[in-house]
Length: 432
Ligand code: GLY
Image 1 (cartoon, rainbow, N blue to C red):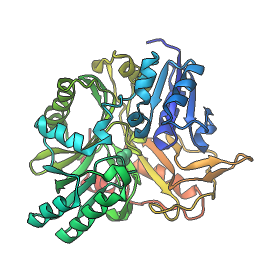
Image 2 (image 1 turned 90 degrees about the vertical axis):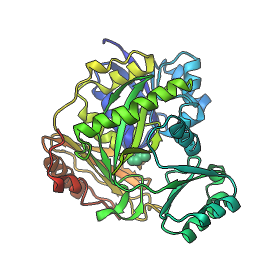
Image 3 (image 1 turned 90 degrees about the horizontal axis):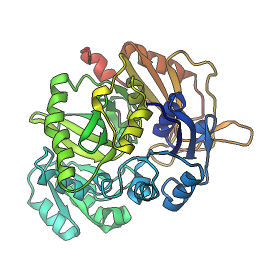
Image 4 (image 1 turned 60 degrees about the vertical axis):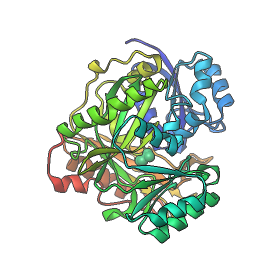
């Protein structure tokens, strides 16, 4: 494919910085511009820091002004706001699902109905829009723990596992009482699933799809999966927990029925579909869908692709994806996320971040919560500040390289987990 792509990339996190690096490496890309971007992205591309990614009209005007012929949408908020619909309406190819398809992430009740209607394995779920009915249901229930989910987008905080009836009733009352505003005016109460979790990400063009390497995120703030949940403290790929046999089962029982169900429901899906799965004793089940790449999973998935990721995004955006032509690299990718003091509560901000100048081969620093000041210094500006990503022949080597650089990065209050990928190393099973 020969193409001169003028890319507009939307977002400001680590996922988008990794996509920016892929754009910079792509021979198809003539120019790449970002809105709004972060301190690290500003060093590599022009960033329109005043344009909010979910301001639909501003994004369309910017894309038209730049004569963009590919817009890549990183986070979920612009997708749920209808940025894709508005860009398509003016004829601009865009990588990401439209507003209707984005409900798979924006509404947990919509998704549960979809999964149950199409007989796709998932936990049983029940919808409630008033606290009295939810409490009556919970008081009748014998099995705990139970999972409570706010229906709408709640900045990653809308899922609570309640250990007993009292905790579940209190949580239901809080959520339905407005804890997450409109996002929790309706809730889902779900059976708890036990097993190991994995992230499956697909690049989708209708019923055609490319399954990227299975990956594993590390959600808790501290080693040994202790402490509160975060946006993600590190990831690696490929994850050996998804064996080749399990991968085929996931394709047959989750992926194909989902894509066929979307087509049957009249939803054209184009973009990333992230399936959070639980590997239960009964087989893999859907925990959730997200309609964008995971962060930090995206950062470890892009280096796994030998085929240019931008070529695949453009193919999905233009309805021309050919999954038979996709090739993968050998080796393993890992990322260790460095967070600010206070995270996942209110993070400390404004600390100067120093990063070694000469990074070892195969290592990148991916910015998330950073901004640059007038003198060009990088300052922390969010909870997840940076990630150190490494690619190497073995997972052990990738992690060693990432940790070496993580140690050398400085900012006040720096925190990171020291056990990213440890479960896989202990398993000692090659993923491929
Ligand atoms: N890493 C989890 C997510 O992106 O939702």
